[in-house]
Length: 497
Image (cartoon, rainbow, N blue to C red; front, side):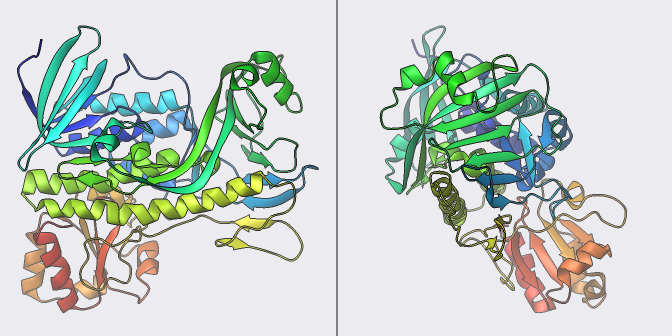
């Protein structure tokens, strides 16, 4: 039996962290959104364990940073060590706040994070969640898209009419299959045993550092997941049998060098295949993919979930422009062109990390490292820019994330911007502008920030005089003259930023 067709502006398939973040973004814009998930309730075991300062900034933009800070802890450095525990490479994570005004690394228990995101959705009457919903077909026309799903409990079929379908449905994505996208494979495909432990005595190790053991008979990694949990990952050998290696006696044998059953209990032991792929096509017509449906990253940098959340931060405001402001759907073409190279850069560095973990001697990482003659290498924070997308004015800084200083009045920049775009002006530049352009700026639906805080002025530092910031906090363009500023204003008025 099929029920009467319903209509929503957006249907999201999958209520993991990526789908839930997108729904919070759309909820802020009051866009009618239906989320379908085939599970009967939220998944109760950890998967992702880390996110970074940019992702915390995205959580801030949806009003959930304080709640996330309560369930997460600040992460420490990551060290790559040889068989004698000598450090051969360190990924340095400064404990001071970053340019985003958040810590550069957070550790968390994923069920806690998902609960925060789902609770956030309760704020929005425009967002509906349906569990136990198995999507069975997708179709689209020039004017809309149609989705059919089965309620697993009642065995009743439903038809949904919608403007757009976003598949946040994971590595086995039905949505990606519909798009019929091939994948670019970066060649890293390895089975690993993932072990999550609940500590019987919470750790008092304040460093919260993680370790990659490169010189052992079997490559391994360990990391804190909050004060109550730790995770170990072990690379499988060719003769390992997954059904055997996940048995508790064999798990404890692997762990005996570091911890025993008197100190912790096994919450989960499972074999996963770590892959490095990106779908070649993320978008066809009114159907798009995000997160693991679009790309899969080995876990060594903790960037898998982060990449998906960046996807939907990029996508959410573009959907708002199209649905609420009738901007051309061509704007969606910039979703993949911007995100693909950004994700690719993280995947390539993660693969290098994986290769080091699998070696038994000192190895060199290319790119963003310091390599002193005496001592270990040091890896800094990777900050790739977006690929080609909408831009205007002076595009030198386009595609880079704008920093978030604390302003003269004590507020964080993003708290003043909200979910809008922003035009940020140096005070002495504003003073030189004509009355006509000032009037135009003040009539725009945009946050206009003129502030003399030291950190903000330091960023401009004679490089430029104005910056147009998108809702995802990336720079659309900058200006050093009134003519260039007019180009930025036109860009915003046309709705593509």
